[in-house]
Image 1 (tube, rainbow, N blue to C red):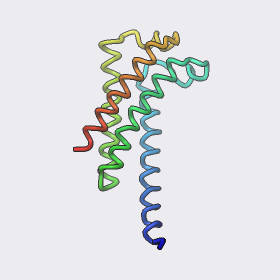
Image 2: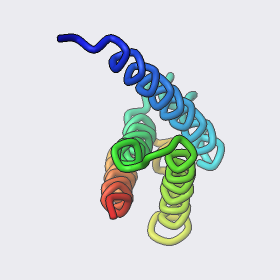
Image 3: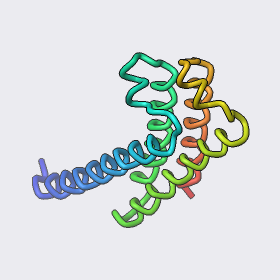
Length: 137
């Protein structure tokens, strides 16, 4: 038998979690684009695949720990704390790469160098996976 009350309660919880995750993702995207020294939106509109890869990897790298947090937290407040921490870690990783390993990242992305975009994307995904795994304990 279908439990309508249970479904409604679960659907409401789903909508709140989905909305919160969506808002955090949008906020992360805005902050990440503000932190990067190049204009991803402009570059992507111009067809710059390296910029699209770097931004796409950062978004996926951020959403991976959000999914983990949604699965492992018991309250909206706890999820929000993990979501904020995940964003800080993802942006710190980009900043560390930019200041140490790839000091010319801005010029390389602006030139559309796929190697730079793939590298940034890979770092973001790796950081996101580690971040997500750490949230399970």
